[in-house]
Image (cartoon, rainbow over all chains, first blue to last red):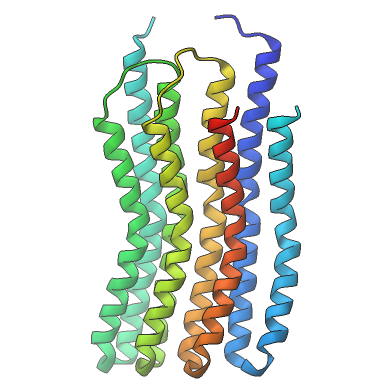
Amino acid sequence: MEITGTELVRAAALLGAGIAMGFGAIGPGIGEGFTAGKACEGIARAPEHANLLTRTMLVGQAVSESTGIYALVVALLLIFVV
Amino acid sequence: MINPVHLSDAAAYLGAGLCMGLGALGSAVGEGKTAANTAESMARQPGASEDLLKTMLVGQAVAESASIFSLVVAVLLIFGERAGTGVEAMSLFTAGLCMGTGALGPGYGSGLAAKAATLSVGRNPHSHTRVQTTMLVGQAVAQTPAVFALMISFLLIFRQSPLGWGLETLAATLAAGVSVGVGAIGPAIGSGYAASAAVEGVAKNPTHSTTLIRTMLLGQAICQSTAIYALLVSLILLYMV
């Protein structure tokens, strides 16, 4: 079977999309879970500040999520644009 | 020239090995930690040994479910029918890889929650009902990435293989499995960590268990978002490319 250059590029792009999203999901997942855990610890210690802690948790997680969204964007670019 | 059915067989067996090997890892470590903490807690609170044993077994059962998914996929791969057409070999190998890596995180994450629960029951035996409830809710969320991986594995195993095979379809198939399988590791470990902190918090401060469970679920939902992106990318790779 003859493999053309275009096919090779397309195959590499698709494989790259899977790798980008798969590995890109590890970091945000662990990081956001750690944040949620620390927020729970804080609420157990100081329940009166639950709102403040939840707000801070959400802001921190949003920043942490950004790399996950970059991975998604790169994966979609590799699938549909390249 | 290799017979295509033999190629499919080889790929399926390799996938089954990876699936069960990797899939057993996370659950085993998590459950071992749970058992270790139970022993520690029992030494500290021999009176609560009944509750501790119950908490340990319930927690371990949930942590085990990820590796049971792996076992099911491995058995299906070993005893399945092979037609030897199209990208079947790659689909079967990827199904194993996907479920194997996909079970790593959920097994370990659920184990973390169970470990925290046994520690908490040892510290505060009166709160065992609330601790168990919180643990189960948290573990259920930590298991969802394993269910995503199981879903993609089944789709790959029972897929109607396209007749022709090109490099593009091969790459898309492998990428779909890698995306959802590897993508399940992080969200599950993160959710498990959140669950373990919530469980410890409930034991420390049982009156605020509702607030704690709410915060835990909110945090876990955000954790899971990347697993859902991975599932989305995987479905796009399987059906839209």
